[in-house]
Image 1 (cartoon, rainbow, N blue to C red):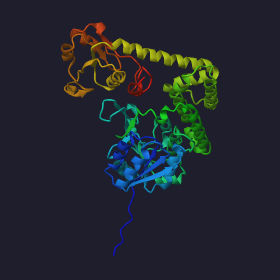
Image 2 (cartoon, helix red, strand yellow):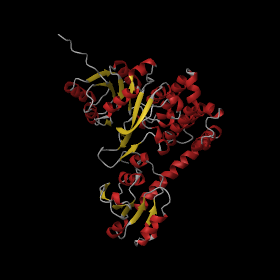
Image 3 (tube, rainbow, N blue to C red):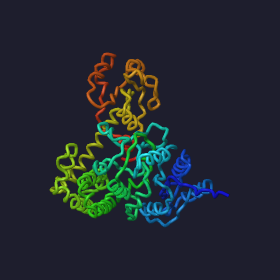
Image 4 (cartoon, rainbow, N blue to C red):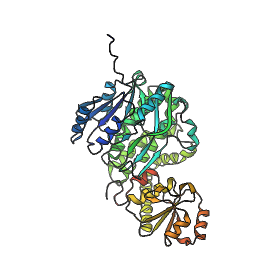
Length: 468
C-alpha cells in the first residue's frame, strides 16, 4: 500500500495577538478564506485579558490549520520569534490582528516567490478607517511615479539601499523561511509592542539578495484602533532602543554598514520626526522633553558629522532639522511646537470657514479623496455635489455622490462654495466656473496641507481618531 504523503505547508501565517477582540474575527476570516489552502495560522496570544483567547479557540475548533500559542505578556518581538520558531511553512507571512488580507494574497505571492527564487516578495497595501467598503481608505504604493519601473523586477537591495527608508512595513509580503533561518533573522525581543518591526525590516532588506515588489495591493492596514502600538505614548523611547539594535546589527556587518548606513541615518531622523507629537505635547521645562531630545541628539550626531545628511536634494530639510537640533535644541523644540500649532490652527480655521456652506468638490482624484475624508472625519456634512470635467467619471460614485459635470453642479447648487481639490495650478478651472456663473469669492483651491494619513486620522476636536 502506498503511504500518504506528508501534508505540505506552503505559507505559515503568524498572527501576534494582544487584546484585539473587536477586530480579530474579521482578521481571521480573511486569512482562513485564502484561495491557497496549504497554509497554517500560528496565533501567538501575548497574555490577552479580553475575549481574544476565546475567539482564537473558536477558530481553532473550526479549522485544523489554526494553532494557538498562549504565553505571558512578554511583548511583540518575543511573540513573533516564537511564531517563527514554530513555523513549518516554506514561507512566512505576518498579519496584524486588527488588519485584513485579500483572499489571493498568499497564493499569488507564493507563486511569484517560487517562480523567481525570491528571498521575499511584497505587495502594495491599503489604509482604512472603519469599514473596508467605506470611503475612508486609500492605496499606498511601494514606489512613487518616477520609480515604478522597479515593480515586478528581481532586485538586489545592495543596489537599492534607499529601500530601508521607503519600505516601512514588514507585514505586506512573505519571506522564505530558509532565508530567515540561514541569516539568523529574528525580532528584537524587548518588552512592549512598538517598533520591533523596524529591526526585522532592516535585517530582511540588508541581508537579502533577491527581492521583489509587485504592483498589486493585498493587505488592509487599519488606522482607527487607538490601542495600536503606533499610538504608544512611550514611542520615542522605544524607537530609540530599536534603532540602537539596528545600529549594532549594521556595525557587526561591515559590508552592509558601508552600503546602508547613510540611509539608516536618514530613516532614523524621518521616523523620529514623525513621532515628535509625543514630546511636543510637553513643555521645554519638562525634563522628559529635554532628556528625550538629548538622547536623539547624540544618536544623530555621528551621521551628521560624517555628512550623511548632506547632498540629498529632497532630504535638505532633514539636514536643516538635524543641524538645528544639534546646535540649538531648545530652539528646535520650540520651532517644531510652533509649526504644529500653526498647522493645527490652519486646519481648524479652514474647517470653520467651510462648515456652514453648501460645498461642491471639484475634481475627483487623490486630493479630493483626502479633502472628502478630512471633512467627514471632522463632521462637516455640507458636501452637496461632486463634479469633474472628465467624461469617463460622469455617473460614477464618489463619497456617496454621483459625479456630474461642473455645469450640472452649478445648476444643482447655485449658491455653492466650490472646492477645487487638485494639486497644481487651477486658474483654468476657476475661469471655467466663473463663466458658468460662480462668483470668484465662492471658489477656493484647497491648500490646507492634507496628506492621506492626516485626512483619515486627524479629528481636530481631539487630535486623533477618537472623539474629542
